[in-house]
Length: 119
Image (tube, rainbow, N blue to C red; front, side):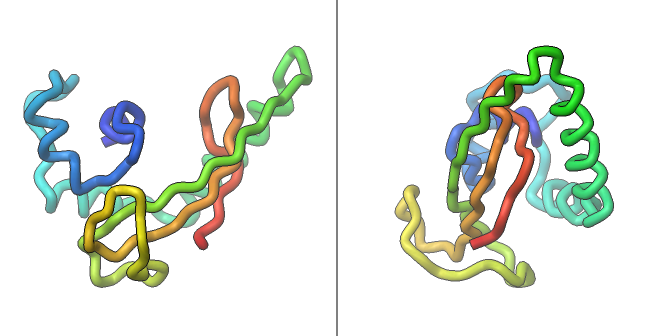
């Protein structure tokens, strides 16, 4: 899933099936929608908090002490009916799905997120 999200610039998970059909994947077969759901359900708040603690440590150990940050916002369309931050709105993909708007602050060198906020 990370492979798809990195290579697919708009990060719209509804495009995963088409992506999997046209891209040589580093695993035997594409993930099913239920497998994707189970994968995302396994990510807990403590996992995200641990990631951001590790990211902070990574940034503090930067040998040049020159950190360049980039700000990015995106909308993520979803078929989910259980996500609390999902709302209908106008997104870049022009699909009629509810969406989650997210603002990211990323380390420009690595592209890894340092901070995020749901909007």
